[in-house]
Amino acid sequence: MEEKKLDINSIIGFVLIFGILIFMFYQNRPTPEELEAQKVEQEKIETEQQQAETTKKAEIDTPKPIDLQDSVAVSDYKNSVGAFGFTTASEGTTVLENEVLYLEVDNKGGQIVEAKMKNFVTYDSVPVYMVKDGNASFGINFTSSDNRILNTKDLFFEPSVSQSGDNQILSLKAKISDSRFLEYRYEMKPNDYMVDFTIRSQGLNGVINSGRPIDLEWDLKGIRHGKSVKYENRYTRLTYNHNGGKISKLSESSELDEETEEDVKWLSYRQHFFSTILATDDHFDTAELSSQNLVEEESKETLFTKAYSAKVPLELKGGELTQNMHWYYGPTDVKILDDYKDLNLADSIPFGWGIFGWINRYVFTPFYNFLSSFLPYGIAIIVMTILVRLALSPVTYKSYLSQAKMKVLKPEITEINDKYKDNAMKKQQETMKLYNKAGVSPMSGCIPALLQLPIFYALFMFFPTSFALRQKSFLWAEDLASYDSIFEWSTHIPVISSFYGNHVSLFPILASVAIFFYMTLTTGQTMQMQQQPGMPNMKFIMYLSPLIMLIFFNNYASGLSLYYFISNLITIFIMLAIKNYILDEDKIHAQIQENKKKPKKENRFQKKMREMMEQAEEQKKAGGRR
Image 1 (spheres, one colour):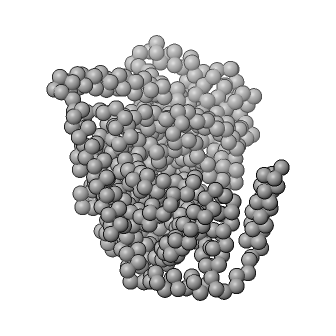
Image 2 (cartoon, rainbow, N blue to C red; image 1 turned 180 degrees about the vertical axis):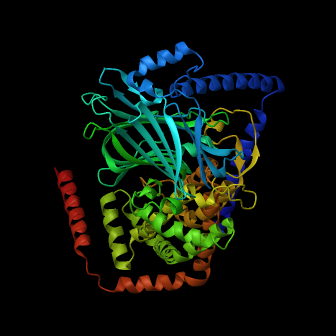
Image 3 (tube, one colour; image 1 turned 120 degrees about the horizontal axis):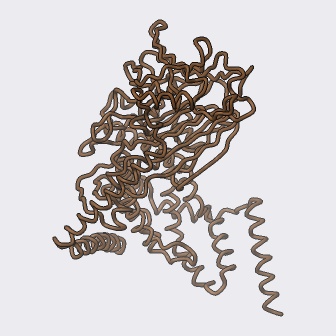
């Protein structure tokens, strides 16, 4: 009766907390006048944000166009670029496209000015652009032999399109004569997100000053694609392969992070589910990298997530430039990136570190892909969750068995606590003796939890990074890779909007309720036991954990909340089955009593601990006598 009463009181307390919150929101709702004032203020903030975005955009815009009809402007351009003025100044772009990718390459600068995914759209049904409206800039900065500081962004290139089998080839040349030039060469293959890219010079030995730095400069601002910009930004990072295959990342949250690295194989400007990657056949000796966070709060008006920048020194070989590279514009999808095994581009996906990432990449990702090949995506999550929980049920059994043993020993532990309440050292010694005699280890309940940790963390990383879940619906969730909103509001509420958002997701609520009942089941007995000094308040934790799930998972992938909801439901059923049909507390008690009768030999660790505690006790007594 006491245990049931505690459960009922806990549930009532949980309901009261939500009731109070709802009442507070209702009492503090704004008046019509306040709503109008907030609307005016919000419009002012949006205007300021748009102006700020325009300013940021201008920072990496391509150079201003030259009026080619103005003979004076053309003459000034030719004078500024010196020998490269031989190239005919002609505005225009050249299109390269295949079944999956659309690219536009500008004659001015020879760089890609538009990159669009053909088979994917954003959360609001707009095509996914990686490069658009000047958000990216690419160029080679060098000094000419007549000490002109030039950048290929400012040079005009002459385009020429050809075919090699099914491959499209675009050659752009910035010439100083018909046979002497700097060339950008793009080669696009059918149905491929990778475009081969070569920079080479011919006959420029002595034209490029070899005594001055030659730098490849690549800047890009990540275009927002997701419904929650803060959630998308959490998985938007600059990742790079360096020092013989080591994978590192710049910070995803700090305002500005900068690093200088050596032996760089590739650079990935990841935008959560899509990536822009620059890879080289050889390696870059060094690279100066930076990542600037552009997201301050959750807002539908935020257009960009991060500003990336890379500066890579290049070297002349025999007085000429030669660099074979590759551009990748495509999904951050392991099934696609694994096709480029020679570059190991799949390592750019944030599977998690160490054993956690290994489990995510080689167990859960292929396992889920297999299930979703013949099951609806949401059902595949449920089936995977059930199978994972069943696989871990022996561990759950061990954990609950440990709890049952501790419950049986509760009266004797309470007696020891009362008897030695003024002597903490003696109380600890006697408690350890009791555990040893009974064949019970207080750590046996922790070890199963630790064994499950790699599984839980791997799944925590799986759902936000699984491209297979993107824009796949289930029940009321439109996108299992984004939040499942059932109610939204436009008014910005300080603190609440920052932490919770301007919407209510249902799966986190269901998961929170399931976690609450699970913790009630597992911690109910612990809360009835005498609270030990220094131990956490289990009742506080029982309320805190569901609250954390409710608040912080409101903007997370609904697939992750669905997993936690189903996982905790299954765990509750498994533990109830263990408690009511598998474990017999009377048999456990009888077994413990039998264990206590048997002589127990201390292992080396137990002996060492006992001797240390006895020595400490003797020192304490000696100090008291003095």
